[in-house]
Figure 1 (tube, protein in one colour):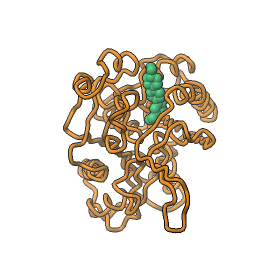
Figure 2: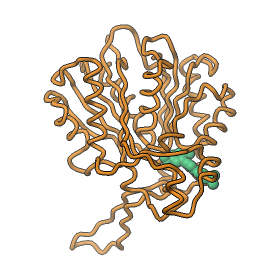
Figure 3: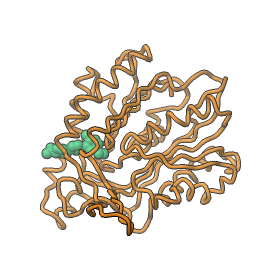
Figure 4: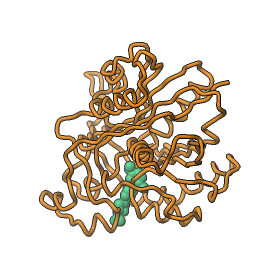
Length: 326
Ligand code: 4VN
């Protein structure tokens, strides 16, 4: 039996950095407010690159690091809520850009849980589908859908992409336990790109709404109440205690929320890696960017010697945890 193994990680963000101070020039906000409420100090914002461009850079980096022929890639999965288009998928564009002529490609939409969902699915393709190599990327150009006239949400988000190469391995499972959750009854708390029927046969009231809208209080409460429970339940399934985990890589929405989560699951806050200071909230891209930076710095080794928790949470609502021997 073979299992999925992460053998490389990569990330990319647009060159243009927008500091909190720079935002004060275009809206009524302050560095002090943003920093103290969220931990965010700056974000990368795309000038001309689209989501597929960021994801292509990540995929090319993964191939370069591993010296793999693009023709050996079996699938490309991209988690995003800011795809270049509904059709084609961003994954299709990336598949062509990197010359992965033998791969099938598709996008997954699960907002800030997208990368965790995609990685779980990719592992299943490895264990039961006979595939040997796959690319899984989270990529966002949220600056396209952020409402720049809304100071409560626009300061929170940024652009970027991160991803991993997954290869079939016979060295036992890497993914030790998982708990993926959804609650669509709370869908309205976090939305973007809403469309309504508009054909000549429709009399629906037009309610198209491109912009990202968030009920901050509702999402904050959801994150603090439901997510720690999910982490603890998934750890319980894995048979590993919170103290047995080396690092927690959680969706980088807000540093204050991570403070509360660390307290609830009773682990040392220093085990929660963070980079929202530099990138803001990049939705599906936040966990793989964090993972890639941790691998690049040597904090995470990809040699099977460490145990980490990956947890996403956000729109849908969706949330989910993977316990990984990495
Ligand atoms: C998950 C979360 C958030 C999120 C929710 C609320 C929030 C981020 C509200 C209070 C405000 C500071 C900002 Cl938990 C967003 C997503 C979407 O990816 C997912 N910040 N805040 C304040 O007044 O302190």
